[in-house]
Image (cartoon, rainbow over all chains, first blue to last red; front, side, top):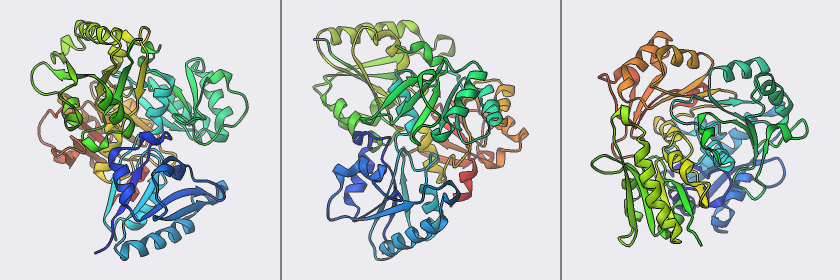
Length: 235
Length: 235
């Protein structure tokens, strides 16, 4: 009997925004793996810290943050081997995923390595996308709005083309691309409508009109939202 | 002391996919309101049925389903008045929202009527978008994919234009627009990649390659997914 690999969405940051199902599976897993920076604390682990028990074995998957090294396939190879040894011994392994496992998550790198060899169950989670809309206090998309989720690392002309056909947009992975994103939205006359959200649902949450954000860079867990017609309901 | 209006995302269908926070607030609310069809059972209520207590007062918001009557503003006016009388008497009211309250939800019609007069707290939820991706078993969007969420009621040429600039797409509110959606995806050579998902995470869940879906119409709670580069990880 091999164990099951669980990909658990733990939500956007507030520990209470984990689902009842993910919490149940997390508490019953003898082994817990999670993405972590090269040094320092894992955000995914911090979200569920209060739910962990000292009896659980932890596997931090420490990823080098240098862009030329990301995603470091050798790191995932080693993590997959370590997780596989637990599954082969019949122990379930829960992998923590910020937000949702299949929505721009790094879980796919483990999933691709393991899903043919082991039983896998994925539990969807609350995405930062809807958490940011909630933080702003207005429906992100309504009625027949088209919503685009656009990664900020794209070229300015690609971002522009994608924004042209939609009513609402979330520009994700802002990080060091903040100045570029602001320039594109300025050009399209959308800067006034855009809002910057950092660390939604966490104690460090910050919401600003994009025009009031200083500097050239932002944290990785930040997003710029352009609301669609739901904006009319903002209060 | 007025009560608080809670907009609670209850997730896509599996009762365990409610968040710990929404469940806590639901269980402590003396009054629970939810969207419902003109006759018959409310899906939002069915999702949380096991969590409700007979002591809670229930307010079904029964919406006529005729397109020319939707959304019936008079229905929301009356629901808002009834909810307001509870809030004025100091009783909290929990409004149940399938998926997430601010992601194409009808909650905005109540929110717009009440948020200036009463304290409101919105709790984000797991969307059908990520639930469908989980059901299919592949990351919906990965790396620098752009993802578009496109309502099926749009004209064919509008759907086409929105699909052209993106790697991944979710076409929502399929319902009676199924044949049109299929025709557009056929034209763009995307029909082979597209998957049809009905009632994700519920017992009645159905997943089919779009080409194998019979008929001209589908249930309202169905979606067509075109996976992006995450498709490579599908197993």
